[in-house]
Figure: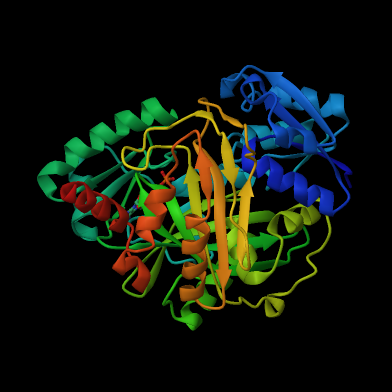
Length: 451
Ligand code: ADP
């Protein structure tokens, strides 16, 4: 049991976690870098400690400084948020070794799911559908490689076992490109991830990104909380998400959701997590598991009525889940637009001072943001400064509320991608729903050609 939580993160998610702590009567300690000093949201914590310079390596990624801050502030638990140390197995272990609670899964689970070959193997064992391809990593010799690719059928994708962030992947369209692609990807994987291990799978041509949120306690209970569609991506970065994923057969979703919960039991998973799938022609294909809270968790909160961060804190305290699968009902539809400090045309980040920050409101509108008028967006971190989330009885109503919310959001001093979101909401294909993961990039190319 803990009563004080150190939040090892910054910005909107630090505030989101602080609020959940407050709801539960827990004290919160925020850490911050010199790059975030003076930000208003830090005042909401019971304690705020500067742990180092702006560079993430010297602050938000500095494990020993964070552990030292936890000891100094009397925190017994650490919430890593997303990004930074949230999927770092050695940090989870170091927190446990220091006698503190890591609010997330064990180091073993993080390690296993972080290795994509091992993750895929564990999912296969648990009956979760995976992208076609051989089990295990790729050999070096040409003949075997060619046989493996022929068996899958071109196009195939070569992926690094240790890959992440959309890096360490290469699509191969024909046999004569295979050897070159394998050696380039292997070298890249060795350099970027320190692990040359590769695997191969079928390359799907027009999939959607559909994911399933799970929540598990330390007593073997688990639930899945419906689906999300995050197909609108630019350079593998999600831009706009929604729940539920439109147009997916309920019985199929239920089967896959249940398999995700089974998989959690199989690997001894506790905490919140997300199973990411590619969905094409009515089939789900597992690609990876995120062993942490995700940016887009609010759309699931809006449709299930559950506070996912509160649940996460409760299970970390050892409480058994108070909800059963049968209690979970998803109501209506929810959308989330990620608002970034960036040029809406060129996507170049636009750090600087926000002179005016008038956030929208009204029924079915939620803003998750740490920004206030006068806030200075630092240049050192991710450019996301707010999430606009809407909920409605139908997808159309959620979209209408989003259009109004975006139109009434006034930001002055810096550029944001608000206009981009407004344009996406007028796109006929997006309005119909169920676009594939290449849709946004195609749409951006067309927009550029028009201008
Ligand atoms: P990362 O951990 O780097 O994000 P993922 O395995 O989640 O890597 O893949 C990232 C993205 O790459 C996916 O969202 C999808 O757009 C594309 N991708 C990955 N595997 C495949 C595949 N087998 N077929 C088609 N696209 C894929």
